[in-house]
Image 1: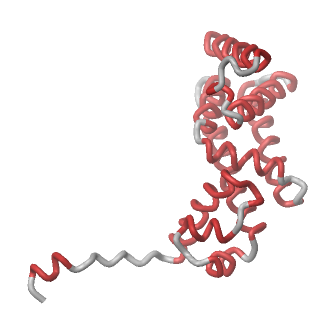
Image 2 (image 1 turned 180 degrees about the horizontal axis):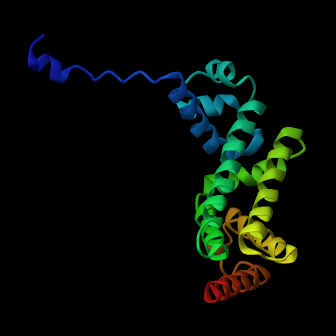
Length: 196
């Protein structure tokens, strides 16, 4: 084959390993489940990953098992980020910053929220409770906070989740109560930064 023919021949896609393909499907699942929650289908995940639906089911067994694995990855990401932040010189500030960085990823945030909702499933519930419990435990151990201070840290994080998930900041003036809540949250965050 001459050089000119080689240049015009379509490039062949590199073949993925089984692990790479599995991660590709999990990445698609995280996006799809973040958008549609547990109601999303394996067919939607397959389309997002550019694979067949039977292939997704063959790899993961069921939609529930796929959702659970995607959710565990999201929850593990939160725990890992907080664990690293807890090792910094100022763990209170570092853990707060780490959580704000995490929830900036709307897919991660929404997948976590869908997992909390799907916690009637025992395994999903166990993963959700572990994520919340670890955030609390890490905060107490790393910062020396009282149990009530650690509860406030976790509770404030959950409030931030809801505000981001509902896109509250994008709707000023829509609801006076929400405007007041957003102002209070901003003042609380500002005060926390001033104390750090």
